[in-house]
Image 1 (tube, one colour):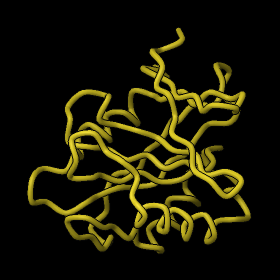
Image 2: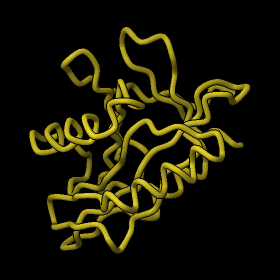
Image 3: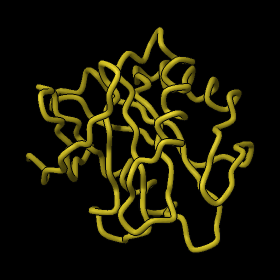
Length: 162
């Protein structure tokens, strides 16, 4: 599986490697002016020999509810995607969504939404990751945050380590 960049969080030892296939989902689903937000779930392969790799970002789904500045993933679709990914040895780490900003910033609505998501999956998701995709065609328009110990921390993007 080809890795094209990675994210590191201050004070966290592990690096999150981003696969080409996950990045393609982000790039292909950017929010164009006037469109509704879209998003999906994030899954890692915890047993990949190169480290923790974001190997699956699920595509937007027609059952999701969305507006220009908000998104609620369909719970039934989430449940099915988790079951399917788990059967492949993948584990849920969070979800991604778009913003109508060039360079996305996490909002108070995002923090509330990710907190609800984390509570819903608290048994399997102790430290959720949030990825927000802005409108910039560059990878600088894709940012990640880690929710940990009551706070949220923005990741630093690094070039591919390989």
